[in-house]
Length: 343
Image 1 (cartoon, one colour):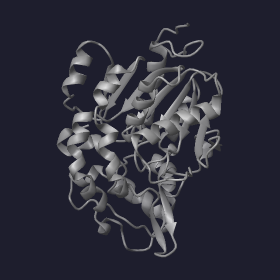
Image 2 (cartoon, one colour):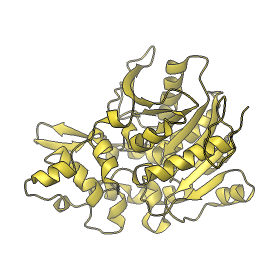
Image 3 (cartoon, helix red, strand yellow):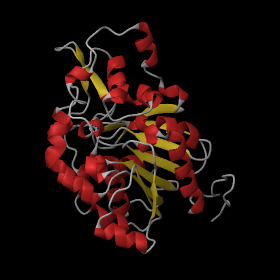
Image 4 (cartoon, one colour):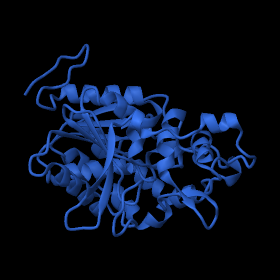
């Protein structure tokens, strides 16, 4: 997370704008028809090669239905929360490896992917936090398994708020991916420009995938082929694809996502891991907290904002090592070279 290019708040499609002012212009999407080779290289991938199944979870007493992707059958649950404008499939490549040692549940947050609610535009931190708690209770009742919350960017803030509420007693770990309060708050003034400067319309899903890696936020073509299709929708009036989530309409909630995040993160009474995509200055609270050993921090090199998509193998290793070192789950997690603990 390089503070010079505001990476800490770069949700779907913002990263390259700050490196090149033309990267988000519509002209970046090639106007010529896609060739057969292009269609093959950027063709969508089915989730079946990564997640075991997908299903809808209806929240009792509401019309809210949250779409989840699951993988694995044993071990603690790694509950993944994506960033703004992404979807649960953002964690697909990592899930295909994590499931060998733990279970994975990756949800489409409100207003994203295949989830459907009474108010998809309400992306307030309170609502998003309550959605996750409601999902956990709907899935597991009063006896949820050991859970590790993993949140990327906006989803990282949601994960912190869920853990801090202490409403789910089985949360045993918290992983926040590439978001720091200080840099995020400083970036808010630029976000509307970033969002409006993105390529807005795509003639095909393949072109949306192609743009996401050539001018957008992703660097891993395979992950883009899996995750990007769920972040766009077909607009019949314009005869093209556009974004599923209108992030520009959520501006009133942005400050709430990140204000006070550092102190709230440090207050969570569980083992904590902060993954950053670059060397970034921690704010005062985090700097003191790190010196006091209150959380583990890892700077992941050679990746963009979406660490879980760009370097899924390294991301998987970091998650499983975190689970193992903190003895999370009924029997720990066996990883070569790391001692396996038991409660």
